Each structure stands twice: as C-alpha cells, then as structure tokens.
Length: 192
Ligand code: ADP
Ligand code: MG
Ligand code: MG
Image (tube, rainbow, N blue to C red):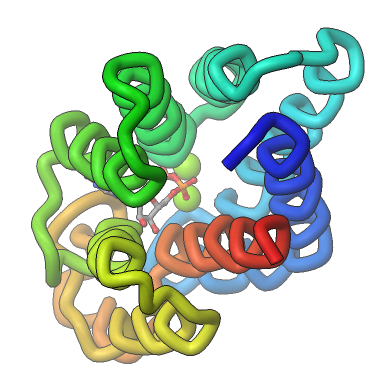
C-alpha cells in the first residue's frame, strides 16, 4: 500500500458508501436505529473532503487524517469503531514497516479492544476477522468478503444495538459487516 493507492482506496470506499447509503440504512432498520447509511456517508464525505484540502503525502498522514475525521465526525458505534481501526493500522504502520496484512490485523485488534466483540457476535468483526486471515494467507478475494457478510445473517447479535432485539436479529445481515465489506472491496479495487 502506498499513498496513491491509499487515497484511491478511500475515494472508492466513499463512492461505494454513497452508492449504498440507502441499503446500509435499510440493513440498520430491523436490527438497529436506521442511521448506519447516514453515519457512514457523512463520515466518508468528510474524509474525502479532508483529503482534498490537506493533500496528505504519506500513508501515515492519510491514516492519521482518516482516524481523526472518523472519530470526530461520525456518531454512533461505527464512528469510534472505524476510527479505532484506522488508529490501530496507523500505529503498526508507523511501528516496524510491517506487512499490510499485519497492519490490517492491528486494525482488527483495535476494534476489538474498543468494542469487546468476538467472532460470531454479529458485528463488523465477522468481516474483519476472515478478511485479515485471508490477507495473511494471500487469499483475499471479493468472494471471501461477500461470504463473510452473508455468514452474519444466521447469527444472533451479542453486541451493539442489534443485541437489544435478541432472537429477532437472526436472519438479517449486520450493517457494519456490510459497510466493512465495502471497505475491503474498495481496497482490492484500489490495489488492482
Ligand atoms: P449505532 O449502532 O450506534 O447506531 P451504527 O448504526 O453506525 O451505530 O453502526 C452499527 C454497527 O456497528 C453494527 O452493525 C456493528 O457492525 C457495529 N458494532 C456495534 N457494536 C459493536 C462492537 N461492540 N464491536 C464491533 N462492532 C460493533
Ligand atoms: Mg445504527
Ligand atoms: Mg445510532
């Protein structure tokens, strides 16, 4: 990952979030409070605006900008969680010139530190964990990402707002899992 690819990644993520804003809201309706589309769309609009005005010229600067923007501009659970993800990635990237899969893994660990969710709790972790694993094995594909999203459907939510509806969360895709899939589809597209 270099700075050009990183900027392209965020631009593509923004495009996908804006395109699928209504669907993200729809996913957040039966098992949440119908704001995930708005939260992500507002946050990513601010991110691309900040990229435009600040023109980061290293991946470190970019990751920092994304972290602070998401933490300050997005409410709800997803802002702090995505913010933590980018903060974790930044920390590792600065640290020891780690491989990109290691950087992603630290993003995942950082979300878990913040939100305390485990695999199977029906959250964004259920996309991040298999993606990190596949990236480590150099087997990350769009199919891997989509399968992980689908696999959240039969799960009963144990974290976040969706856990309030208990059994009724079964049978629905988790909104944060879906937005995380957009993030990783954008990453593969930017890297291609
Ligand atoms: P809110 O639930 O506060 O309205 P959003 O609707 O923007 O925030 O985001 C909801 C998403 O956040 C969920 O679909 C889930 O993927 C994710 N989420 C919620 N709580 C946690 C948690 N503790 N750990 C990981 N992800 C979580
Ligand atoms: Mg919500
Ligand atoms: Mg909310």
